[in-house]
Figure 1 (cartoon, helix red, strand yellow):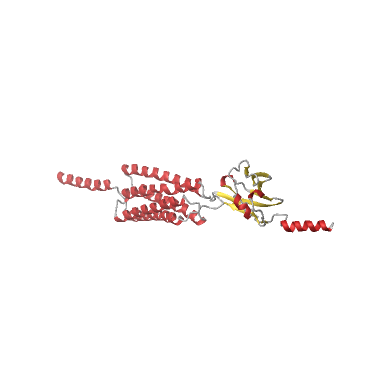
Figure 2 (cartoon, rainbow, N blue to C red; figure 1 turned 30 degrees about the vertical axis):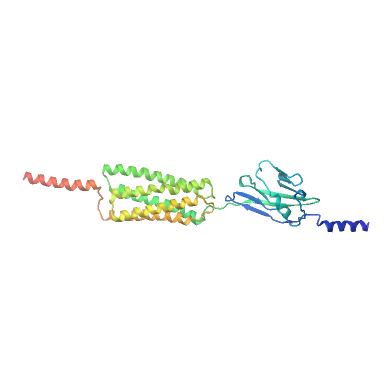
Length: 321
Protein backbone atom coordinates (compact mmCIF):
# COMPACT_ATOMS: atom_id res chain seq x y z
CA UNK A 1 0.00 0.00 0.00
CA UNK A 2 2.66 2.52 1.03
CA UNK A 3 4.85 1.87 -2.03
CA UNK A 4 1.84 2.67 -4.28
CA UNK A 5 1.19 5.95 -2.47
CA UNK A 6 4.86 6.89 -2.80
CA UNK A 7 4.77 6.16 -6.53
CA UNK A 8 1.66 8.34 -7.01
CA UNK A 9 3.22 11.19 -5.09
CA UNK A 10 6.40 10.95 -7.15
CA UNK A 11 4.37 11.00 -10.35
CA UNK A 12 2.49 14.05 -9.12
CA UNK A 13 5.75 15.79 -8.27
CA UNK A 14 7.23 14.97 -11.66
CA UNK A 15 4.20 15.98 -13.66
CA UNK A 16 3.42 19.08 -11.62
CA UNK A 17 0.05 20.03 -10.12
CA UNK A 18 -2.92 18.01 -11.36
CA UNK A 19 -5.01 21.19 -11.36
CA UNK A 20 -4.43 24.27 -13.48
CA UNK A 21 -4.17 27.44 -11.42
CA UNK A 22 -5.77 30.62 -12.77
CA UNK A 23 -5.10 34.25 -12.12
CA UNK A 24 -8.47 35.28 -10.70
CA UNK A 25 -10.30 38.16 -12.42
CA UNK A 26 -13.76 38.74 -10.98
CA UNK A 27 -15.13 41.09 -13.63
CA UNK A 28 -14.30 43.28 -16.60
CA UNK A 29 -16.19 46.23 -18.09
CA UNK A 30 -16.73 47.59 -21.57
CA UNK A 31 -18.29 50.81 -22.82
CA UNK A 32 -19.68 52.27 -26.02
CA UNK A 33 -16.15 53.40 -26.88
CA UNK A 34 -14.88 49.84 -27.20
CA UNK A 35 -14.66 48.41 -30.70
CA UNK A 36 -14.02 44.94 -29.33
CA UNK A 37 -14.29 43.19 -25.97
CA UNK A 38 -11.58 41.06 -24.36
CA UNK A 39 -12.42 38.73 -21.47
CA UNK A 40 -9.18 37.78 -19.68
CA UNK A 41 -8.22 34.22 -18.81
CA UNK A 42 -4.71 33.57 -17.47
CA UNK A 43 -3.28 30.21 -16.39
CA UNK A 44 -0.27 30.41 -14.10
CA UNK A 45 1.16 26.90 -14.34
CA UNK A 46 1.01 25.82 -18.00
CA UNK A 47 3.75 23.28 -18.74
CA UNK A 48 2.81 22.23 -22.26
CA UNK A 49 5.39 22.77 -24.98
CA UNK A 50 3.11 22.13 -27.92
CA UNK A 51 -0.26 23.65 -28.83
CA UNK A 52 -1.50 20.15 -29.67
CA UNK A 53 -1.63 19.49 -25.93
CA UNK A 54 -4.08 22.36 -25.28
CA UNK A 55 -7.85 22.51 -25.31
CA UNK A 56 -9.87 25.64 -24.50
CA UNK A 57 -13.61 26.08 -24.03
CA UNK A 58 -15.55 29.26 -23.29
CA UNK A 59 -19.13 29.09 -22.00
CA UNK A 60 -21.86 31.62 -21.27
CA UNK A 61 -24.78 30.56 -19.09
CA UNK A 62 -23.84 26.92 -19.54
CA UNK A 63 -23.71 27.05 -23.35
CA UNK A 64 -20.56 26.70 -25.38
CA UNK A 65 -19.74 29.85 -27.33
CA UNK A 66 -16.18 29.01 -28.37
CA UNK A 67 -13.87 25.99 -28.38
CA UNK A 68 -10.31 25.43 -29.55
CA UNK A 69 -8.99 21.90 -30.02
CA UNK A 70 -5.21 22.02 -30.25
CA UNK A 71 -4.86 18.36 -31.26
CA UNK A 72 -7.13 18.88 -34.27
CA UNK A 73 -6.21 22.54 -34.80
CA UNK A 74 -9.95 23.21 -34.96
CA UNK A 75 -11.96 26.19 -33.77
CA UNK A 76 -15.72 26.13 -33.15
CA UNK A 77 -17.97 29.19 -32.69
CA UNK A 78 -21.35 29.22 -30.99
CA UNK A 79 -24.44 30.82 -32.45
CA UNK A 80 -24.37 34.65 -32.35
CA UNK A 81 -20.67 34.56 -31.40
CA UNK A 82 -19.02 34.26 -34.80
CA UNK A 83 -16.36 36.88 -34.03
CA UNK A 84 -14.99 35.10 -30.94
CA UNK A 85 -11.32 34.16 -31.08
CA UNK A 86 -8.22 33.46 -29.04
CA UNK A 87 -4.55 33.55 -29.97
CA UNK A 88 -3.41 29.89 -29.99
CA UNK A 89 0.28 30.79 -29.88
CA UNK A 90 -0.23 32.46 -26.51
CA UNK A 91 -1.76 29.38 -24.90
CA UNK A 92 1.69 28.04 -24.11
CA UNK A 93 2.29 31.17 -22.01
CA UNK A 94 -1.01 30.68 -20.19
CA UNK A 95 -3.08 33.29 -22.03
CA UNK A 96 -6.51 32.02 -23.13
CA UNK A 97 -8.32 35.36 -23.23
CA UNK A 98 -11.38 35.58 -25.45
CA UNK A 99 -11.89 38.46 -27.87
CA UNK A 100 -15.11 39.36 -29.69
CA UNK A 101 -16.78 42.26 -31.44
CA UNK A 102 -18.66 44.67 -29.20
CA UNK A 103 -21.88 43.99 -31.11
CA UNK A 104 -21.80 40.34 -30.03
CA UNK A 105 -20.86 40.94 -26.41
CA UNK A 106 -23.50 39.90 -23.88
CA UNK A 107 -23.43 40.89 -20.23
CA UNK A 108 -23.13 37.88 -17.94
CA UNK A 109 -20.81 35.29 -16.36
CA UNK A 110 -18.34 33.69 -18.75
CA UNK A 111 -16.54 30.43 -17.92
CA UNK A 112 -13.05 29.77 -19.23
CA UNK A 113 -12.09 26.07 -19.23
CA UNK A 114 -8.52 25.06 -20.11
CA UNK A 115 -7.26 21.51 -20.48
CA UNK A 116 -3.59 20.58 -20.74
CA UNK A 117 -3.26 16.83 -21.34
CA UNK A 118 -4.48 15.34 -18.04
CA UNK A 119 -4.69 18.64 -16.18
CA UNK A 120 -7.60 21.03 -16.34
CA UNK A 121 -9.22 23.95 -14.58
CA UNK A 122 -11.72 26.74 -15.01
CA UNK A 123 -12.43 30.28 -13.91
CA UNK A 124 -15.48 32.54 -14.11
CA UNK A 125 -15.34 36.17 -15.23
CA UNK A 126 -18.30 38.54 -15.19
CA UNK A 127 -18.68 40.89 -18.14
CA UNK A 128 -20.32 44.22 -17.29
CA UNK A 129 -21.43 47.19 -19.38
CA UNK A 130 -20.67 50.67 -18.07
CA UNK A 131 -22.47 53.76 -19.35
CA UNK A 132 -20.10 56.66 -19.93
CA UNK A 133 -21.39 60.12 -20.80
CA UNK A 134 -20.05 61.51 -24.09
CA UNK A 135 -19.20 64.87 -22.50
CA UNK A 136 -18.75 65.73 -18.84
CA UNK A 137 -21.86 66.91 -16.94
CA UNK A 138 -20.66 70.53 -16.95
CA UNK A 139 -19.93 70.41 -20.67
CA UNK A 140 -23.37 68.92 -21.35
CA UNK A 141 -25.01 71.82 -19.50
CA UNK A 142 -23.02 74.52 -21.33
CA UNK A 143 -23.54 72.94 -24.76
CA UNK A 144 -27.31 73.07 -24.24
CA UNK A 145 -27.57 76.35 -22.31
CA UNK A 146 -25.57 78.60 -24.66
CA UNK A 147 -27.65 77.92 -27.83
CA UNK A 148 -30.92 78.18 -25.91
CA UNK A 149 -29.77 81.46 -24.34
CA UNK A 150 -28.79 82.77 -27.77
CA UNK A 151 -32.23 81.88 -29.15
CA UNK A 152 -33.97 83.64 -26.25
CA UNK A 153 -31.88 86.77 -26.76
CA UNK A 154 -32.75 86.68 -30.45
CA UNK A 155 -36.44 86.63 -29.52
CA UNK A 156 -35.77 89.67 -27.35
CA UNK A 157 -34.42 91.54 -30.37
CA UNK A 158 -37.46 90.44 -32.34
CA UNK A 159 -39.71 91.84 -29.62
CA UNK A 160 -38.08 95.27 -29.84
CA UNK A 161 -38.57 95.36 -33.61
CA UNK A 162 -42.23 94.33 -33.51
CA UNK A 163 -43.10 96.78 -30.74
CA UNK A 164 -41.44 99.80 -32.31
CA UNK A 165 -42.45 99.38 -35.95
CA UNK A 166 -45.90 99.62 -37.53
CA UNK A 167 -45.19 100.05 -41.25
CA UNK A 168 -46.47 97.36 -43.63
CA UNK A 169 -43.04 96.81 -45.15
CA UNK A 170 -41.57 96.14 -41.72
CA UNK A 171 -44.45 93.83 -40.85
CA UNK A 172 -43.59 91.68 -43.86
CA UNK A 173 -39.98 91.46 -42.69
CA UNK A 174 -41.00 90.63 -39.14
CA UNK A 175 -43.04 87.72 -40.46
CA UNK A 176 -39.89 86.33 -42.04
CA UNK A 177 -38.04 86.86 -38.75
CA UNK A 178 -40.83 85.08 -36.91
CA UNK A 179 -40.70 82.06 -39.21
CA UNK A 180 -36.90 81.84 -38.98
CA UNK A 181 -36.98 82.19 -35.21
CA UNK A 182 -39.63 79.49 -34.78
CA UNK A 183 -37.75 77.10 -37.05
CA UNK A 184 -34.50 77.65 -35.17
CA UNK A 185 -36.18 77.24 -31.79
CA UNK A 186 -37.80 73.93 -32.75
CA UNK A 187 -34.58 72.51 -34.20
CA UNK A 188 -32.48 73.49 -31.17
CA UNK A 189 -35.02 71.99 -28.74
CA UNK A 190 -35.13 68.72 -30.70
CA UNK A 191 -31.33 68.65 -30.79
CA UNK A 192 -31.11 69.18 -27.02
CA UNK A 193 -33.54 66.31 -26.40
CA UNK A 194 -31.48 63.97 -28.59
CA UNK A 195 -28.19 65.11 -27.10
CA UNK A 196 -28.75 65.00 -23.34
CA UNK A 197 -28.41 62.73 -21.54
CA UNK A 198 -26.51 59.96 -23.22
CA UNK A 199 -23.30 58.30 -24.25
CA UNK A 200 -21.53 58.43 -27.57
CA UNK A 201 -23.98 57.26 -30.25
CA UNK A 202 -25.45 58.25 -33.58
CA UNK A 203 -28.44 59.75 -31.78
CA UNK A 204 -26.30 62.02 -29.63
CA UNK A 205 -24.13 63.02 -32.59
CA UNK A 206 -27.24 64.04 -34.55
CA UNK A 207 -28.52 65.96 -31.54
CA UNK A 208 -25.27 67.88 -31.22
CA UNK A 209 -25.36 68.68 -34.92
CA UNK A 210 -28.92 70.02 -34.62
CA UNK A 211 -27.80 72.24 -31.76
CA UNK A 212 -24.73 73.71 -33.45
CA UNK A 213 -25.23 73.89 -37.22
CA UNK A 214 -28.59 75.76 -37.32
CA UNK A 215 -27.17 78.59 -35.19
CA UNK A 216 -26.08 80.12 -38.50
CA UNK A 217 -29.70 81.29 -38.67
CA UNK A 218 -28.96 83.54 -35.69
CA UNK A 219 -26.45 85.47 -37.80
CA UNK A 220 -29.05 86.07 -40.51
CA UNK A 221 -31.73 87.03 -37.98
CA UNK A 222 -29.47 89.49 -36.19
CA UNK A 223 -28.42 91.06 -39.49
CA UNK A 224 -32.07 91.55 -40.50
CA UNK A 225 -32.89 93.02 -37.10
CA UNK A 226 -30.04 95.52 -37.39
CA UNK A 227 -31.18 96.52 -40.89
CA UNK A 228 -34.74 97.09 -39.69
CA UNK A 229 -34.01 98.64 -36.33
CA UNK A 230 -30.76 100.54 -36.13
CA UNK A 231 -29.26 100.20 -39.60
CA UNK A 232 -25.61 99.22 -39.95
CA UNK A 233 -22.92 100.89 -37.89
CA UNK A 234 -19.33 99.99 -36.98
CA UNK A 235 -20.60 98.53 -33.70
CA UNK A 236 -23.26 96.32 -35.33
CA UNK A 237 -20.72 95.15 -37.93
CA UNK A 238 -18.34 94.23 -35.10
CA UNK A 239 -21.12 92.24 -33.41
CA UNK A 240 -21.83 90.33 -36.62
CA UNK A 241 -18.13 89.56 -37.11
CA UNK A 242 -17.96 88.31 -33.51
CA UNK A 243 -20.98 86.09 -34.12
CA UNK A 244 -19.49 84.65 -37.32
CA UNK A 245 -16.30 83.88 -35.38
CA UNK A 246 -18.31 82.07 -32.71
CA UNK A 247 -20.13 80.03 -35.34
CA UNK A 248 -16.88 79.02 -37.06
CA UNK A 249 -15.35 77.90 -33.74
CA UNK A 250 -18.42 75.89 -32.80
CA UNK A 251 -18.59 74.15 -36.19
CA UNK A 252 -14.88 73.27 -36.06
CA UNK A 253 -15.35 71.95 -32.51
CA UNK A 254 -18.35 69.93 -33.67
CA UNK A 255 -16.42 68.33 -36.53
CA UNK A 256 -13.64 67.32 -34.13
CA UNK A 257 -15.95 65.98 -31.42
CA UNK A 258 -18.33 63.86 -33.50
CA UNK A 259 -15.45 61.59 -34.52
CA UNK A 260 -14.28 61.01 -30.94
CA UNK A 261 -15.88 58.75 -28.37
CA UNK A 262 -14.01 60.65 -25.68
CA UNK A 263 -13.88 64.21 -27.03
CA UNK A 264 -10.95 66.41 -26.09
CA UNK A 265 -12.08 69.43 -28.13
CA UNK A 266 -15.19 70.11 -26.09
CA UNK A 267 -13.85 73.48 -24.82
CA UNK A 268 -13.44 74.68 -28.42
CA UNK A 269 -17.04 73.81 -29.21
CA UNK A 270 -18.32 75.41 -26.01
CA UNK A 271 -16.29 78.59 -26.53
CA UNK A 272 -17.83 79.00 -29.99
CA UNK A 273 -21.35 78.59 -28.63
CA UNK A 274 -20.54 81.01 -25.80
CA UNK A 275 -19.30 83.67 -28.24
CA UNK A 276 -22.49 83.25 -30.27
CA UNK A 277 -24.60 83.86 -27.16
CA UNK A 278 -22.43 86.87 -26.24
CA UNK A 279 -22.95 88.40 -29.69
CA UNK A 280 -26.71 88.02 -29.30
CA UNK A 281 -26.54 89.69 -25.88
CA UNK A 282 -24.53 92.62 -27.22
CA UNK A 283 -26.99 93.02 -30.09
CA UNK A 284 -29.95 93.06 -27.71
CA UNK A 285 -28.30 95.60 -25.38
CA UNK A 286 -27.37 97.85 -28.30
CA UNK A 287 -30.88 97.78 -29.74
CA UNK A 288 -32.37 98.47 -26.32
CA UNK A 289 -30.13 101.50 -25.84
CA UNK A 290 -30.97 102.87 -29.26
CA UNK A 291 -34.67 102.28 -28.70
CA UNK A 292 -34.58 104.03 -25.33
CA UNK A 293 -33.07 107.12 -26.96
CA UNK A 294 -35.84 107.34 -29.51
CA UNK A 295 -39.51 107.79 -28.85
CA UNK A 296 -40.44 105.80 -31.90
CA UNK A 297 -38.00 104.00 -34.14
CA UNK A 298 -38.94 104.61 -37.74
CA UNK A 299 -37.86 102.54 -40.69
CA UNK A 300 -35.49 104.33 -43.09
CA UNK A 301 -38.13 104.83 -45.80
CA UNK A 302 -40.64 106.37 -43.43
CA UNK A 303 -38.00 108.54 -41.80
CA UNK A 304 -37.27 110.14 -45.19
CA UNK A 305 -40.87 110.38 -46.43
CA UNK A 306 -42.33 112.22 -43.41
CA UNK A 307 -39.93 115.25 -43.50
CA UNK A 308 -40.39 115.43 -47.28
CA UNK A 309 -44.18 115.48 -46.94
CA UNK A 310 -43.97 118.15 -44.26
CA UNK A 311 -41.80 120.26 -46.54
CA UNK A 312 -44.28 119.89 -49.40
CA UNK A 313 -47.17 120.88 -47.15
CA UNK A 314 -45.39 123.99 -45.89
CA UNK A 315 -44.51 124.97 -49.47
CA UNK A 316 -48.13 124.60 -50.52
CA UNK A 317 -49.29 126.87 -47.71
CA UNK A 318 -46.81 129.53 -48.78
CA UNK A 319 -48.06 129.39 -52.35
CA UNK A 320 -51.66 129.85 -51.16
CA UNK A 321 -50.65 133.00 -49.36
